[in-house]
Image (cartoon, rainbow, N blue to C red):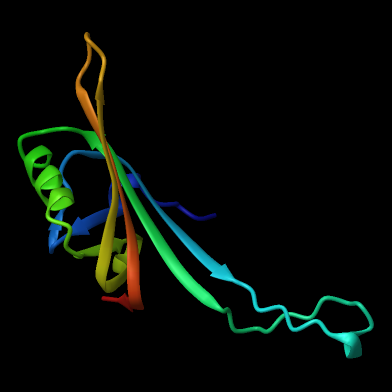
Length: 131
């Protein structure tokens, strides 16, 4: 039986620093298929094994703190690519040289804390390493 992993064993880094005060992190891996169905395939769908496009989208949610609020807002306003790494259990790391900072949301209830959600779209070749 597997022991599983603790959510704290999975984290997101932006520009070589862990995003502070995260409570939820996610990585979405996407592939688009290449459909080569034609008259010779008798109507059965035929897909290439290699995808047309691969992409990774990374999101982080958490509590807005002095360690992350200003840096996230500033990075979003800069309109520059950022470096993003998704570091999973066993130090399995997925990264690309550049990531587009797509979305930044802050919200808060009158009797609670301010929360943030940030979404990054990795661009370029994606490197997978186990360190």
